[in-house]
Image (cartoon, rainbow, N blue to C red):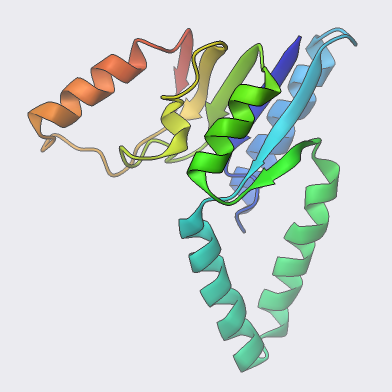
Length: 165
């Protein structure tokens, strides 16, 4: 069995990283050796822009503490069992997920469902069980349009398990 974890593991955020690492380790601890668990190595274009700007600013300002933090998170990635592919583009990621033949995909972390057009809804995944772990959507509020409510209902029905925070 092959399990893929799709989360915010490459962000400079201690909580997000620890959640990804802890879930991976917890699953390793309760599963059999014939089960393969990996973190799907994806970073969204929004995160690339955001952290590129922060890193550039830290370099220009010679902010040693911020640069040390970037380096620490970069090194910490080695502790994760990452997928063989890395993706920076949603369409490429969707193709790789389908070809990787995951039996289960677990999506999760803060705010992965904060907007409607992102890969974390797993809309193109059809041959895997879908699970959501500790998901939240901070920006979704009671002022949703009718088509957004329909989108949420239809997509939530596709998940086999949903755990929220």
